[in-house]
Length: 381
Image (cartoon, rainbow, N blue to C red; front, top):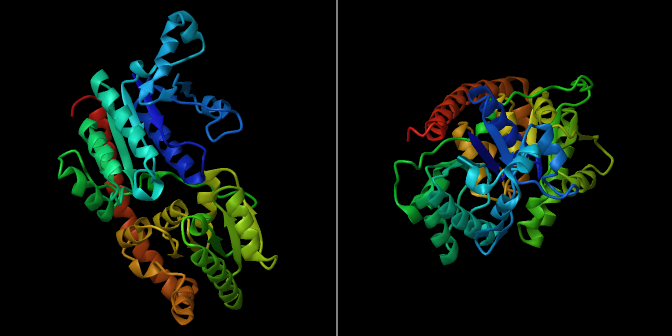
């Protein structure tokens, strides 16, 4: 069996967490399966060396105008392709799409159109398509609506990650038996606390997100920096030992340095499992990165968030803590009260207990999700 994983990878730590979660599950359930992914240039987000280190075989792919020209690699003798582990699109049995958040008006037409073209091709070839739990919508653009409808028509299992995504999706497609809501699936992936992480020095992790600047208006971006600085100062006043934690790349790192201003330490870690471990070992978390928040909440770490899409409010609702989502325009007294509550020994303990209870429910739903995925992989649905 050949299984392709797409849209997860090394472009950011959230995508890498999703990739690791999928690989861990597939290696356990299907040890003989061949995993494939489309590689790209060495300095890009999907370098060949990183893929081969995880045991992936490269997939020959060159998509232009909806046509998969990578199939031309079939002209290469099979023995030579086998030597280099090269996989053709027509050889793939199952495609697992873990985009996280790509199919929406907010990201433009390209991703949705590509998905529609590819999904129709896979359906013709008998390739099964699974869209892993992810955020969808909104879909006001007519071209995107049409593309999403076509993609869902050709899929075997589609899993919106939250109630709003489910509503956005089914407003386009109508209700389908194979559209099933499940939570983010990285909640089962175990974090690793680095040996050199000093919890006596590092207390509350602040995780910035450059998307709060480039996906919002200029005035909101400026307000975001001021908001995060104010949170850091409040946590310093509470002697909560705040530190900046980089969850993504250079843009987030520059933003963290600006927010810190040299007043609080900046921690950078490349391994997403270790980042999750740090978040789990923190006293509390203030974050704008979605998967940093999943990592905190799923481990029972009190957290507050500010975000730029519906996925943040839905995540905190799933964990029974909707009050934890703040706006950068909230009154300072309200923000300070929330920060106080997550670091206070008594209220923080109560919040943590509530989060752990909800976390068990979310993890049970993820196990159900994998059962549905298995049914598609095994061809029983």
